[in-house]
Image (tube, rainbow, N blue to C red; front, top):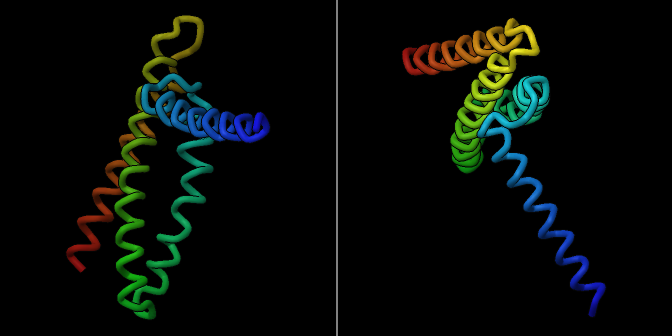
Length: 129
């Protein structure tokens, strides 16, 4: 019986760790390199792959798969907001740290601004086509 309780606690701790990590990023509590390179760059590559596939095969997929991709796109939008707000806040913490040069904080903020402009531009362009 004690083994079962240990497994349950491990699962609870791991889910709490994930929630804590997501919350730490959202609040800007992660380091700027972790927020930008891990969550904003590497994780984005993994998360965007299904959308790239959907765009490449848009004329060949079934209606059911199209609905699945639409739901996935909505989840990607949530990720996009989460990652950019986390990077923005983390860069603010980086800028306010007087021991470090603020250059990388401002560079990260510029990257967020350009990312949002690109996303809005692509969305508008896709509706006009």
